[in-house]
Length: 471
Image (tube, rainbow, N blue to C red):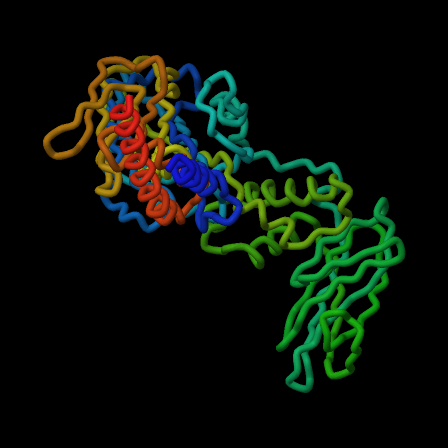
C-alpha cells in the first residue's frame, strides 16, 4: 500500500515539475504605460485648478485584446485670478507609438469647444514595470518631457539635413509573366559612403561586395539613395531564391536625381509609412524621428539601411506630447477637458485570471498655482469588475463603479488593479503558479493531478486507520 502511495506521489511530482512539453500560445505579461495629467509649459503660470474630475471608463471592453483598453477623460476647472488675460500653453504627455497614433483617440476642449493641438515626438521608453519612483526611466520625468517639446531640427552625426545625395530610381518589370528575383550588386567604402535603400527585401554583403534583391511579380519601383562617394550598380535577375539561375526575361530603367537628405527622407517616410497617421505630425517632427533612426543605424557601423530598419521606430513605445493653448479672459474660469485611450498592464503570471493594472501620474498638477478637489471614477469592465489594489481608497457603489474624492493632490500617483474576482486568494495564486508552468494545458494537468491527489489522500487515510487499529 505504501509503495502504491509513493508511486502516486511521484506521478504527481512528475506532472507538476515537467513543463518542457507545455507552452503558452499567448503572452502572460503585456506591458502598459502610465497616463498623465496635463501641465503648463511655463512654470510661472498663475492659473489655478479648483477641481478635477478623472474618469476611467472600461465598460466597453469585451476581452477582445490581451489587455484592457478604455477611455480616460480628465476634466479640469481652471481659474485665472489675475486682472489680465492669460494665454496659457499646456502639454499633455502620454506613452504611445507613432504607428498607432490616431486623431480619433484624442479630444481636447475648452468650455466644450475643440482646441487645435500639435504633436511632439519624444524619447523611446523600454519598460515601466517597476513602480518605484526612484527607478523610473528618465524619459518619463516631466522636466525631460518638456525638453522634448521643440521645433528645432535634429542634427545628425553622419549627414547634414541639407546634404545632397544621389537617388537611383529603378523601374523593373518582368516580361514573361514569371516572377524574377531582381538583384543589384555594388562595392563601396563604408567610411566614405552611406546608403539607404527602398523596396528591397534581401541584403547580403562580404568583404568584396554588397548584394540587395527583391522579388518582382509585376512592375516595381526600387530606390537606392547614396550619400558621399558614388557607387557603380551591377544589375541582374534570377528565377530562384539562391540567385544562381539567371534570366533575361525582364526590363529595367534607371533614373538618377540629386536630392537633399531632408527632402528625400520626408518623401521616403510618407511612401513607406502610414500616411494617415503621419499626417498628425509636422515635417520637423517627422524628419527628427526618422533622421535620428537613420543616424543611429549608421552609427552602429551599419553603413547601409532600408525601410525595414528605419520605419521600425514608428512602432516603438515613446513619449508623445500634445501641446495646445487655452485663452483665459481676466478673472475668469474655464473647463478644460482631455480625453484619450489608455491601455493597462496585463499580468497573468501569478494568478488564476489576469491582473490589469493602470497608473495615472497626478504630479503634473502640482505645477499649477493651486489645486483642490479631485474626483476619481473607475468604471470597470464586466470581465474584471473588481479593484483589488489601489494607491488611493476607492469605494465601490451599488452600480459597480468605484469612486474617490480628495480635497487636495495626493502625495503619490494613482495606481489601481482590476481583477475578475473580489480578492486574490491562495487558490488563485496556486492556480497561477500552475498556469505559469503549464499555460493553457493547466486544466488538463489539474484534471490529471486531482484524481491522483484524492486517491493518495484516501490511501493515506486507510493507512492511518490501520495503524490506529493495530496500535
